[in-house]
Length: 66
Image (cartoon, rainbow, N blue to C red; front, side, top):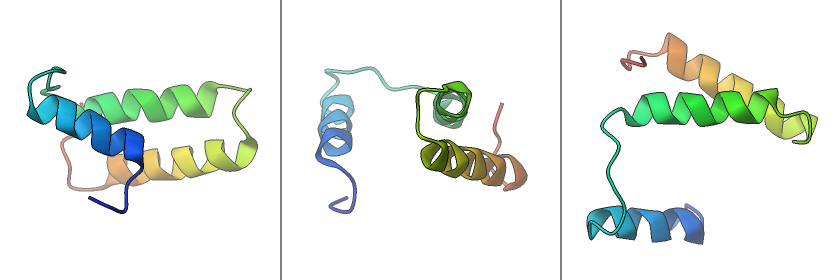
């Protein structure tokens, strides 16, 4: 868990303590966010490329992305 940012760790703790709701379709949520990053022209190209690559890998993996 320490390899992730402080904000991710904070949200993890909030979900674990029920202060923040758990998302049943977590992979779908990830794909939505990655797609928003890729489509946002204000995001640097390098980050958009990384997001697109991550999203494509999720789609081609064994995970059930809806």
